[in-house]
Image: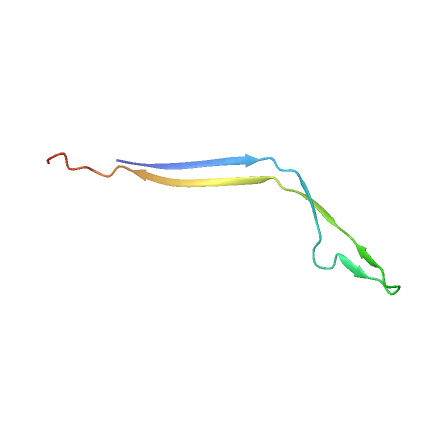
Length: 60
């Protein structure tokens, strides 16, 4: 006999600050300007699984 398992989990994250392409500017006066981005790190994790029993030979 087997079973199919389906589930989902929602993980509440924090806020992340990071630099992406184009977020660092090299200014003509030699200084550097950073333009960091912010985003939430929430995540939905989907799970799909199959379980089944392996028959055992009871004659020994």
